[in-house]
Length: 256
Picture 1 (cartoon, rainbow, N blue to C red):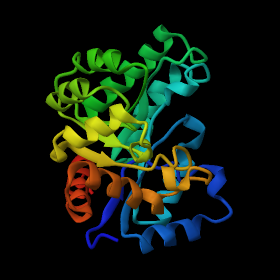
Picture 2 (cartoon, rainbow, N blue to C red; picture 1 turned 90 degrees about the vertical axis):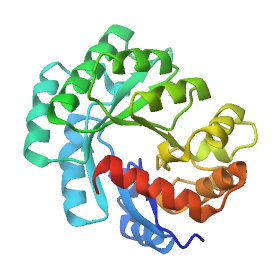
Picture 3 (tube, rainbow, N blue to C red; picture 1 turned 135 degrees about the horizontal axis):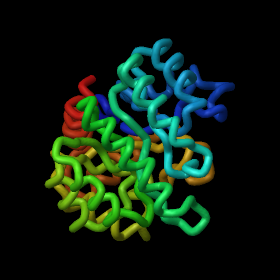
């Protein structure tokens, strides 16, 4: 157990799968030195749910956005609604938005429309942006380059070290999830070992992407310590050092 606090930079604690034991999940997080948890938005219909949850618990911090996974369900008016909602409710970031180029997802043109429209809002409102990127890192980089004043994070990073360094140069943080705990995840382990710690965040992406130790369980913030331990081992560093710096990074990005 590190003496320093940890911040879970990406956790869907508003999802219904936590409805029966959310209070216990939060207590376990606290017991494992998780001081703050960032809750990303996915669809318009869930923004109020996140809003209410974060008002109830001071350690939870809201983001609002339109996730690429549901691009076929979003409509173009949702962009205007998002802009107004953010203006009224002041989240710590816009998101999660991004690109997901798995075959079953919406077409590239539709995803790019919603992604770049949200990047425009984030830049105009001077908010960091939480980006989902699956099989799309190069396209994400090209979209980000169209905006000169953006900052944010790439959550559950899966690209190469070279791409991570490009993103860092564009003022983005790289967020490492539970996949880094798996021995066969050579690309992300190499990135986590080598990239600048000053640009790293850590996350659970709960309830998904559980670490190796908890691979058969619903993921939750308390398990973040396992990701921190794996990164510390890869970098031949202390868990406290990983916890301290990633917490500084998260507080800086999200202004918490």
